[in-house]
Image 1 (tube, rainbow, N blue to C red):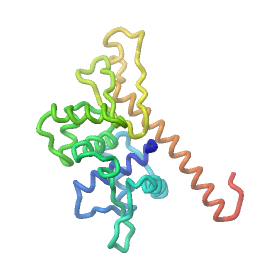
Image 2: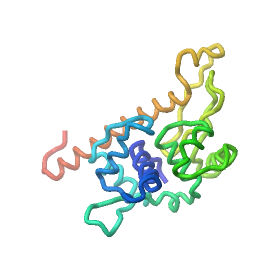
Image 3: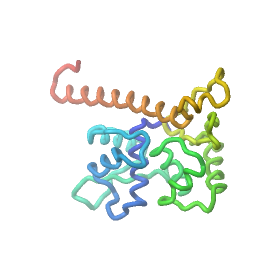
Image 4: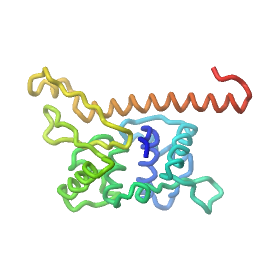
Length: 219
């Protein structure tokens, strides 16, 4: 399976999250899905995606069978098929979801943030599923190098490709922490850069599609 765009990962994560947190309104309409993607809390990075961009991401996920349209409603609604397509247990799906929504986190942070999706007995249980996701092909997560000033290493998902975290070679111990930039923050900035690039490509595709429908040449 190809890597997801950052917005596709956000859409998929929102669908899994809302299935557990607001089951009465799941599957999600386009409006609810867009609102979930643009949520100001429990999201890293915070984004402002349009409904058109979200629908483009949904189309991409549908082509991978990760998302499909629900039936039995006059309004088009969407639901995920993540566990079946990826062949993962609910615990692993919960961890991937929280990583896709909140960015790199420690095992302790993941245990806390996964509470509404799956209750892990302890941190070692979280680490066990993370290790399985990191070692089983295809690798779904990676343990990031522990940054200066951080007590624990963070984990990041690989659903959008490799996470590039610059490794400082000339800084004295603690200097990186003094600069106020952690490995998690660097990974989040990388994710934002990737999201913006994907957004540009999505807009290009939309312009080209509109141009074809109008019978004019795209700029």
